[in-house]
Image (cartoon, rainbow, N blue to C red; front, side, top):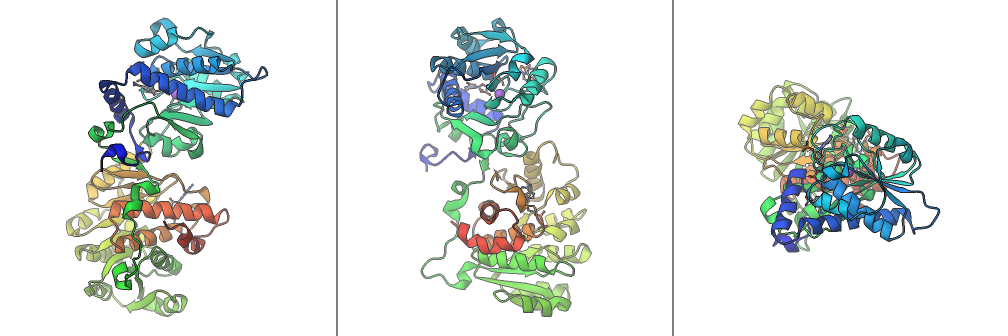
Length: 499
Ligand SMILES: NC(=O)C1=CN([C@@H]2O[C@H](COP(=O)(O)OP(=O)(O)OC[C@H]3O[C@@H](n4cnc5c(N)ncnc54)[C@H](OP(=O)(O)O)[C@@H]3O)[C@@H](O)[C@H]2O)[C@@H](O)CC1
Ligand SMILES: Nc1ncnc2c1ncn2[C@@H]1O[C@H](COP(=O)(O)OP(=O)(O)O)[C@@H](O)[C@H]1O
Ligand SMILES: [K+]
């Protein structure tokens, strides 16, 4: 399938990959000035959508321009908006004579007012468009740039960012220091990871206010760039999503084994078991530690419950080759006993979803997992678990890089949970979710997620797509559940969001 005809809008490009795409466009006959013309026109279009029709009582649109091409886009947007009848002024951070290349050429085409930086003007603006810095941001804002951004943030004006809010790192979604707080953002060709990874997504104005303008970059640019980051949307994984066919048998649809939890978290493994069934697994067995058997067998109707006394009893269940996928962790208890079970499952080559207590049990024991690994492992840490497992990785500075590095180090698929859950594969691919509502942060939802992942793995879905699909479905079910949701609500709603 040629990239040019495939759906591509879920692809994310880092700022350096975007620079390569721009260079490719220029090499292939789309001139730099033409790219900038289209970029600025795209910004003007979106700005006019937010502003409404031009009228004499509109407050000024102030376009902030900086030293690079982001400012060049600002000059183009100014020209279009003025032509369409909006009251526009440019406020330039730099002396216009210092501009170079395309930006200088676009500045020459602007014959309207150019003001020096003046914080008072900002407080009276109706809209502030940020063309200070975009993908070329190379250090934290300071001095006058920082003052302007802070004054813009305090104004009542609508704030629109060109490409990226100034001060936001497009690769990581982290502000590098002072940062423009946009109500909306217009970017070009494709989004960048920083548009989706929190807090970047919120600094850009939230998913529904992040717009992508087509500036003529040929999709064939992606063949050379070979993108490895994706927005977690159905286009990424729906082609591989398992669906029961007319002749499906329950054994074709996978059999998941869930390690049963212990007091006080017996419900955690029940949530995982039911989520695996809801996501389409044909059979689910919960392996209950003997003292919990009666409770679990009474509580569960759709899930089979088997009793075990010791590690060998649990691992002995895997003599049934149909038990292809195991969930380890929810409510399992932290310590050597759980670590041994994880090691045993992994050494038997089963697909393993390693979550919660099983992850904490692996702290300082990750090497054992690496050396016994014969199968496919998906780890689902939240920040606390991630920090304990991978203390050297830059979680606070760059979640995407941290998740990728953890996957590369362990050979496992990483699901780094949080506001914008990241799935990272050992081969470098990563997806960034942007659909989870804040009310998903309630006890037990992580257990549901690990069950969905296992259910999809058991049906043969490849791990990167299975984990990404599970994260998306989990978020989507939570959106549909609405505020006040509890983890078990997700089980009932899941069938309604399945593709
Ligand atoms: N063909 C294309 O490429 C297209 C590009 N497009 C647009 O171009 C934008 C990228 O343009 P760009 O590469 O010129 O970078 P931009 O963000 O304008 O700033 C770089 C300048 O800022 C400076 N600087 C950086 N940080 C700083 C700081 N904290 N404080 C002070 N200075 C700082 C930096 O200086 P330096 O790092 O070299 O010292 C350099 O001078 C992109 O976001 C999109 O809007 C579209 O038109 C589509 C076609
Ligand atoms: N602010 C938030 N917005 C959206 N999703 C969130 C937020 N905080 C947490 N989540 C999600 O909630 C789930 C919590 O999982 P986890 O921390 O494992 O909880 P538990 O162990 O209680 O099941 C994860 O899927 C995570 O991505
Ligand atoms: K900007």
